[in-house]
Length: 228
Image (cartoon, rainbow, N blue to C red):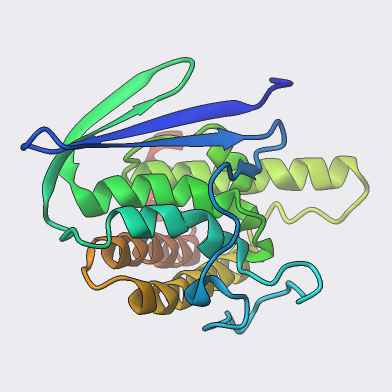
């Protein structure tokens, strides 16, 4: 384990030479280090468009930790359209990945890692994946990583004496909760942003969660051929 944590750096470079940089620091247990403002605003309040499945209490936080941690992104991209072209580069200690894409897909990648590590109980199932963050992951890559991570969690549950779910019977319930967070986060962002880049990034994340739930229902048929 890296005792100091990890850092991912995202650069958004636009055709006119404009550049936006974001540093994402993770603790050794893959929790997000927010080095920006912690004051928040109306749309980040825990009570504002609160998720129906939220398990946080007001005495723990007055603001939704996910909303608070993505607030800087929302502010930075609030005047940009989702289809604006850019080159997005993700840099970490072991590699650098670049892709010519649009704003919404770049934001989908960076929002995914921040949301998963922000301390939301419903999204905690995704937190270990963030330590091994894969920028711009495809649907198949996300499905493989999500199910593998879930099964590894069950192994550790068994090691600690808890009942493991090696049959994946409960994974769909977890991703229904993930979908709810995505949907209500979208409501929050609609209150904060006039343009669609941030909102479409959340919609893409939500679609990925829905697809994973459907794939589990088919017995992961799309991956079975890899193990034949």
